[in-house]
Image (cartoon, rainbow, N blue to C red; front, top):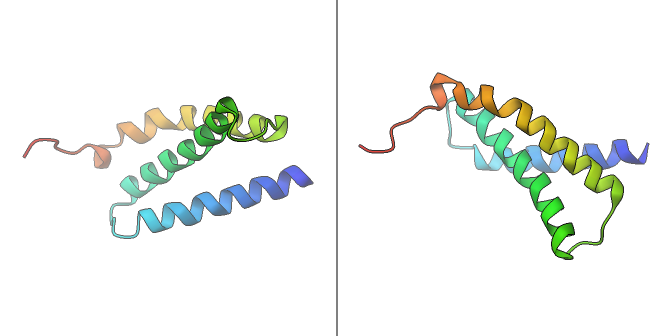
Length: 91
């Protein structure tokens, strides 16, 4: 049950952060990609902080962050391949 509440709190934080970041973006595919990347960033930050000793190691949090990275990796190819996401670097 504790794991459920930790996951719920993490999801709410990520969703809130993603919403603020995508506020001015109108394209739904771009918003979805931005939210996906933000979720990967949060999980990587947790693992990085544990690895650097900035955060005490917690096996449950590390496992959740690992699973978030695995899920992120599975979703990334489709998100990056969306036609709406492609943009011109040089104008």
